[in-house]
Image (cartoon, rainbow, N blue to C red; front, side, top):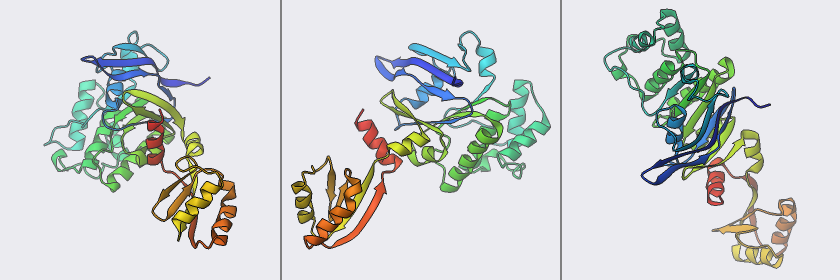
Amino acid sequence: MVDYVIETNNLSKIYSKNKVVDSVNMHVEKGKIYGLLGKNGAGKTTTMCMLLNLTHPSSGEIFLFGKDPKKYSKDLYSNIGSIIETPGFYENLTAYENLKIIAKLRGDFDPYNINSILKMVNLDNEKSKKFKDFSLGMKQRLGIAAAIMHSPKLLILDEPINGLDPFGIKEIRALLKRLSHEFGITILISSHILSEIENIADVIGFMDGGVLIDEISKEELYERLNKFVEFQVSDIDLAVRIFRELELKENDDFTVDGNTICLYTHLEMRDSFNALFVKAGINVKKVNLCEENLEEFFTRFVSNN
């Protein structure tokens, strides 16, 4: 039996007759990194706010760690860390001083724990630097430090890599993977940056227009990516005519872009097609077996649902 840390049943949210989240059925498995992928305005943040009890659902059910949060709110939410939008800290205080205030407010101040957390997020060498002088990546890492300081079992992060440079993205990616793989923290992370979700997530939830279209494991995703053969030819009109004579249909079996023809079916016959082109006097400059990337898959997937 699968152990779900988050499970929703027809979760919906309506604002002024506008359904921003529409009957979402989400399943976040224990110990996994779940990437919630969608364009800005897809309903990702609203979904996370409902999970965190920051806004109330219009309808539907939420189960956290297999329990109803309306009945066990204190126990359940004490096991969750989160970042929704930009983390807020005191500008003139250091990372340690900011975490110290948060720990005291929670009633669990422990200097050793704070130092351990700062080391974990690679901020232990920045103890004297004030928050106002932090880079955006450092601010995000401090936000994650605050979110995991109480050793949560679940981490919910809304766009934690938004605005970061490539180095900052790499740091956050490595940190989240470590939290998941070494410490067993289940992570729900949202983003509109497809490549980063692909790099970090074990399972990807595709969201568009408030609807969770599907949930796909990384392994299943790679199996579902379209494969195609790319022919770069000297005479595109003749190549197209040959395909049509073989009863291949444009836009169904193949597409044309300049002097390149992409074949999506009958891939096992690519050598035969190449031989036909050469026999017809076409100079075949390149033959590549290709695979669509996640962005291409997402565009196709959303448009077909």
